[in-house]
Length: 274
Ligand code: SF4
Image (tube, rainbow, N blue to C red):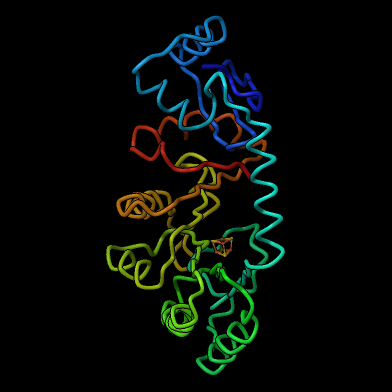
C-alpha cells in the first residue's frame, strides 16, 4: 500500500486532518491514524485488518502499490467527455421557494406559494421535449425546501419516470434539502420517485447550527431534527452528502462536529466544506 498522491495534511488547533482531493474524503486523524499512515509510508508491504485501515482504503487515502491514480483520473475524464457529448441531461427543478427555516444568509424569496400543477405539467412537457436524444436523465430537486412541495415532485417524477422507462432511458434524481422534514414516510417518497441521493447542510456543532438554522415560526433550533433526518436517509443506504458551512466563527468546532457525526454512526457520509 502507498499513500495517495492527492492527500493534503492539515494541522488546525493541534488536530490533524487529512483531505483527499480526488475522492473528497476528509478525515480527522487520531493517534492510531497518524501511526498507520507513518507505517504505510515507510513500508509498502504493510497491511492491517483494522477499521481505520479499511476506512482509509475506502476513502482513497491509501491505495495499492501498483495502482495509478493519474491513469484513473484520465480514464474518468475521458468517460465524462464521451458521456457528456451525447447522453446525459440534467435539470434543476424548484417546486417551491418556500422554506420552514429562516437562515439569516438565505437569498431565497421564501414566498409561501408552490409551483402550480399547471406549471408542473409545463415542466414535464419541457423535460420530455428536451430529452429525445438523451440516454440518461437526471433531476435535482432544489428550493426553498423541496420537501414542502412533495405532491409536485410526485407529479413530475411520475410522468418523467414513465416516459424514461417507456423509451429506455436511465433516470435518476437528487435532492438538496435541509433535512428537517424527513420522516419514515419520506423514505418511501424517495424510493418511489427514484431519488437516490441527497445533500443536507449543517452549520456547525449543535449550538452554532441552531443560531443560524432555526424555524421561521418560533426560532427553534433544528440540529437534532436534522441529525434525525440524516440517520433516516442512511438507514436506506441512500447516497448522502453532508455539506458543512464553515466560517471563521465555527472553524474551531469542526473537529467536535466530525467526532459527533462519527459517534452517531454518520461517519460514512460524504462530507464537504462550504
Ligand atoms: S434552509 Fe435553505 S432555503 Fe431554507 S432558509 Fe435556510 S438557506 Fe434558505
